[in-house]
Image (cartoon, rainbow, N blue to C red; front, side):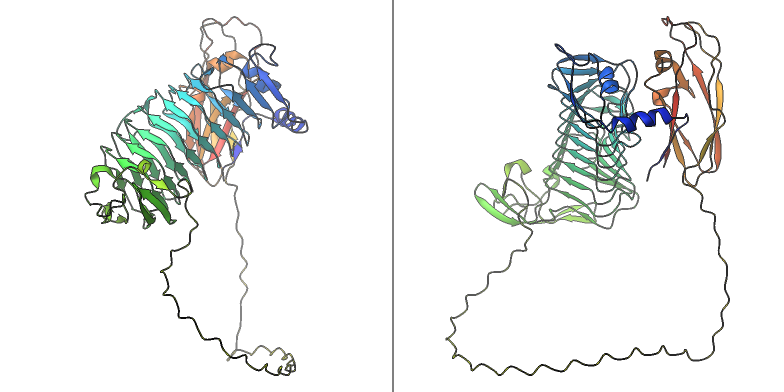
Length: 508
């Protein structure tokens, strides 16, 4: 369970959310003729209730800071071809549950989407992510996220194009093609300690990097099905100390230069490479019933004696697992019963021999009803028997001190950068972060939405621009960070400029 702790007092923000939750959900228009709001930022700030929908009309919408969204709202574009969110090097950061964004193109971003705080069950659908620049382009780091029917393109130099470490995440129907990761560990989809992830019906083709990495033992019970995984320069599916009971079936997995399936570390005892349900398949009129596997391209050297598209011999994987029914042609060439959905999971029974008709039997005489038996008296409970021999005992008092998982203190509660002019940089302001809790933590930062642009554009922590700041602090240790303010050369404001820095603390 991941908990958040904040650096500054947020009572006002809490009250705003509480009041917003009492209003009725409403639809608003953004952009175009006679809109309710001209900008996305104004629409997010001005929408009054959880459940509101922002209908965004065609146009290009620009951002000059990270867009934090602490409401459960829906942002729906007219079309991902006509509604462009130019992030200007910044990030969309949903922080509340049930956030939805659809039919939008995100360009020029750091992260495209970075789920934080309470952003469970987010839905990102029918969007295009073009040219995200962060080492993790899209972060689905809260449980129940659905990433569906999106296109990810023109990403270069990343470590992970799409990263998740949450439970029950669905990555469905997306296209990842022509992406160019950096280094020998680059990957397109990475699930790290992510239970029950579903990766289905995606095109993961011709990328520089691994296609799918299942990483660490909590990444168990994954379902990988219906994908085309081909032409990638590293592994197709990489089992990297992965967890148990994943099912990998009905995929086209071929021509991946690092191996169609590869492993590192301890292999799971159980990985299934055949459909867990029986299906009826048809190829060129040849019907087959069973548990089909995957198409392996030239890696499978068996034959198809029956012409039904199912190999006559199993396909070995990593000298440990077996695809019992490998496909000899692409999954797309088969016709599946019920449009490819699994049939009812009944085991096919062997046909029984027809039985000879039996002669009609003579009606039997009705038997006399038997006398009801008298209810037996309930037996008296037996006294517990004394153990043989004598017994003595000694009471031992017990005590323990249960410490909270997250307990963090900061050495400062405000930052005063003094007198500065345009183009100047403040002296570093040091703050000590002490992790008193029972687990390691990750600290990230956010300049709050109501802060002046001076802070949104000028706060740097430990030599990192604040959206990119991330620090791991082990339990029972103290770490020191320095904060500086870089005033932009073209900044025109004067006087006492206010802002709020939020430090988020997350158990890891």
